[in-house]
Length: 394
Image 1 (spheres, rainbow, N blue to C red):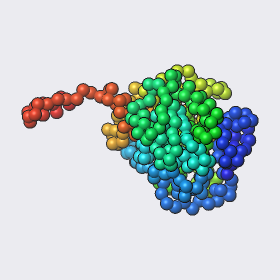
Image 2: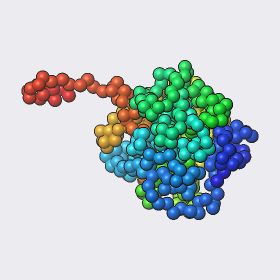
Image 3: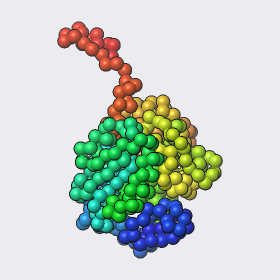
């Protein structure tokens, strides 16, 4: 295994602390050799059963037993949107309630192996919650930069309780991201764990392995939200490695979804330009409120190479989809996770048979989004008649 630039192909040793290519400035990936992929005898549970294809040792893992999240058949919702077979891969089942745990177990393990004293990230919420938990597990200091007033309290509470040093930046996520990169580059003992770090994405690619093993097949399409866009590219990479190893013959179409007020990747794909930036992104889906996604090139490649697509949904559609999933299937997700559910209603699915929607975070991460639009609670006197009256009004 080596680190390799996705742009010019320059390579770097695994243990070199580097976040972008020194030759062209683009992001890196972990490249597995054919010999690495020859060992596909996976055993155990969770993310670390795929150790042969991961760039770290399971015996040293900082783990909270992440992975093995539910793949839920959703027949009622499938009928509503016209899909023959629909599954929800619910990453809210992870220990801190989001998909970030898959990446953080590998990222924090690698940070410790490199001798880092601290790990750092910019975050809209889920990254900070996960990084703080895994840093605590391994005994590392956690440094979190958040955009002032733009993080759901459920997520911020997790970072705080795990002992992270949290700084609110007077700006948006992109300002926080710029600063945390400058901090990490200037302090060799602070290891950056945003998704610009390719080791983190190695953990996230294991979702593809789990979907394949659970279905004993590859879905026709995988639909998921895009923020910083590490996840769509990681999952596509996972299916690519299964294909290279000869375990699957076909790969799914990758479909990335963004909120209308924060859709720089969709705009880039539609325009065909070589830039991806949106000033002042805004959406109720705080986890994907990102205007300058660091992995946009990887995401564009995943969409195009898979024959997939990128779509936009409105905040109203996101909130409606959040309610639909909860009321039809009993699965409560945060607004960003509802974006791909909303997209299910935006197209005709006659060309696909099996769809997997990836919901990336639990609904309790951001309960305010639900409560702001919830109907007023009914009240009752402490009598049966009063209760019946209240039930009629509820």
